[in-house]
Length: 145
Image 1: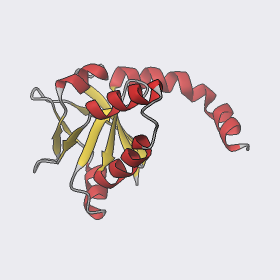
Image 2: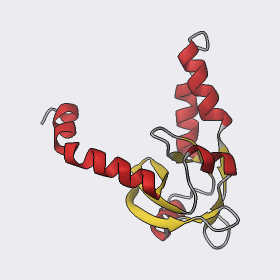
Image 3: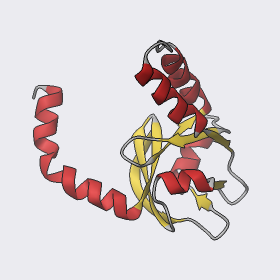
């Protein structure tokens, strides 16, 4: 559903204009609300409301008697905020989420099929430069090609 990499900037009020293609996809799929939370690898995850509910069901099913499940759910859900685009296609990202992801101004907004990831430009470049040379080997290991 969401694909591609886009360089954008956070404005002084902490707002991010999402890529036009992502806004079009949201409109085509009748998505009005998203949820943004702490992701993995120091990025932010952004889910449509429908996908959020699906992920929520999976994570709620984890046993609260397991310490790792409690830790994960606390970090994931306590960081969550629901967002709706304004008329200019902007969303407000809270400071605590920007701090978590080391986001200052420039960000990479990355489509990863069922979610959008929001990365500090610098952290995205580090991730990309580290993983890109291993991409084929990773695909062989995961996909048994």
